[in-house]
Length: 97
Image 1 (cartoon, rainbow, N blue to C red):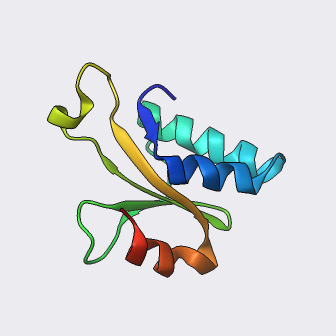
Image 2: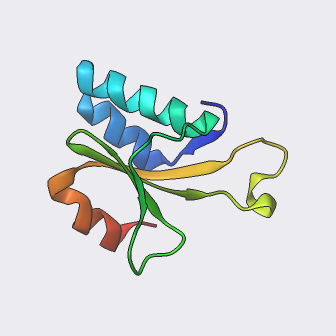
């Protein structure tokens, strides 16, 4: 996942999910995003460009592409801001930062 940068909030979200199948599926999907898999369920967030959401079961990953000037020396492609349950998606979009 070297091409994915997790925000502090996203790291905390993943810790809250805990161990188990859901976390394994999330990590697998994030790795797929990092390598550019084509079969991921990704949609742009309406009215919130440049943010996208990645759907993994009951969870949603809010992310955006990293600009070249933000990346610096790293090869990061995406910044993951949040990992939330689907019921919390609207609130997470409203408070992302």
